Length: 144
Image (cartoon, rainbow, N blue to C red; front, side, top):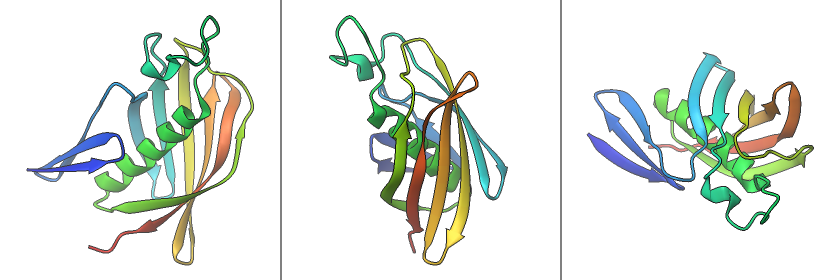
């Protein structure tokens, strides 16, 4: 059994199983690999999430960094399930188009594409049928 610390997450690996030990900042509920190049994830935004602390009093809105963190968590969890380790190193063309409020549910669609030395993860975070955030995350596989 091994424990690894990635960003704000503690990962437990035991008997070829990967468990993401959630912490108070995590919104991620479920990650499904649809195929080698497509990931879908579900997330809940709890009313009492620490992300809302001070953002904004009387009018809580989930900060954009929380949405990017959610996408990062889904990518890392999927990679670990496949036995890969990734180093995420760039954000590109990130757009925030609608606010996310306490109590809302989100879905995340991620498509991976090999681009030479990088893997490019194109993502959309969706609330009901509306895109609230989209962009691209670049990563490299870490050689062990």
